[in-house]
Amino acid sequence: MVLVYIAVMVVVLDQASKHFVVTRLAYGESVSILPNILSLTYVRNFGAAFGLFYRQRLLFFGAMLILVLAMVVFWKEIVLVGRGAVWASGCVLGGALGNFVDRVRLGYVVDFVDVGFWPVFNVADSAIVVGTAVLSYVLLRAELR
Image (cartoon, rainbow, N blue to C red):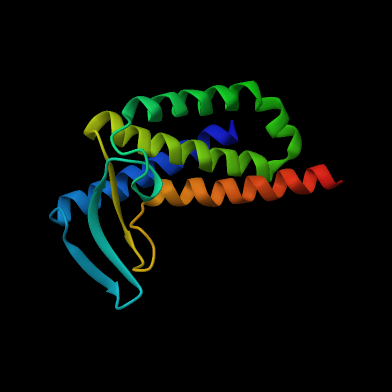
């Protein structure tokens, strides 16, 4: 159940942050938060990470379905690995769902975190990357025991 709560929290935080940006910035507008370090820049991503798979909505829907099915099928194994795996899986699922909501509702994903040297991203993207890294570490560590 913790996995579901984490996923829901990620989706809520992701959607709230995107709503904040969309209602306060014009498309393409950028506001510096920490000069030369961090800006809020409202962009629309019609692809996946780095704009890959541009306008391939069916591919994203299929990937989302596979992810949810994998979480259901491997639920017991995730729990057996431990809390780290559960939390990380919740982050990955919540991030995927957050971007999925955008794709269904808008046809694109709202991105806004701009660190200058990296493509603009969002809370859901961060949750997916951090969750995947933590899950990889926890699973590798469990295998080495």
